[in-house]
Image (cartoon, rainbow, N blue to C red):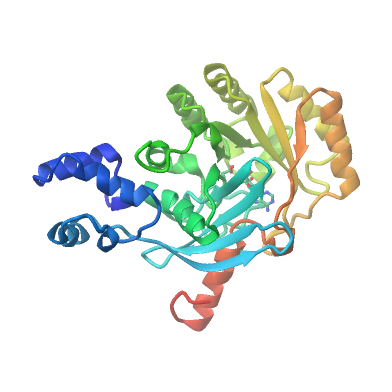
Length: 354
Ligand code: SAH
């Protein structure tokens, strides 16, 4: 919690802070309401707060507001990809998508990532730092302000490994679920992990109603180890066991993410092996042809290969979908926008403007 900003304090923490400073009982909730109503980014804008309190708060509990530094929008489907600038000059990516059930936001949980997955651009320079709960929440508020739409669904699937920033993730969930703030339903939230089993077990015990997505990407340990360093520590059997426990406790269907890379994990045999491992699980497989990343050596599977893979899973009664590819015309794989901004900055030897 060390160093968390004003956006990261829960309603209860705000109430306690305000009580300690001799403020009236309603004050903490009032400030929390301002912050998580999503329309302000400074204490100065909180017009019903005494001026001296605003000044004091500015000194004592910095808000560390973020700003949108770049938007790429898709002319085809309204997808908007944001590069957001944090108070210390770091950047993260956030993606706004429109679905038939509402507006969904893909948010980041860390600046960079230390999981080292071979196909992923976010991890190329390692993890720079964790995001605070407030920085996770602010991504929602900035996207809502930019689009004028209410975001009903959140997927924690941007840069970073959310279970590598577990305490902040749980605090973020509390913040956005709070009726005094955004009051988002936890059932509309998906958290995606590369498979930190102990955290999956801890998270299951909380039984929040959140959907868990697990990045599997392989039908066996041998292939998984080639793609994801985490597989060297956690065998698939143990990972799938933790997933079974998650579904038993929460009764929530798990999503398995599977990025298809040509000649690596996309053969009919791989599909059959995968179906065998997932048999009987309360799950759903989400296939996506791998997004080519300039610095990486993987290419997306061809359409025919993808369709064949899908049909084999279906024949084995494994629920499966092909991820709807939104924002194809603006698409750079996750983490690439941030990398480009960084490269540009280094070239310019200057600030954050692109
Ligand atoms: N660390 C978490 C969440 C961030 S990654 C996780 O591993 O799940 C979000 C999802 O995008 C994961 O399923 C990840 O494996 C996938 N992904 C990353 N790079 C990709 C790429 N180049 N093509 C396809 N999927 C990718």
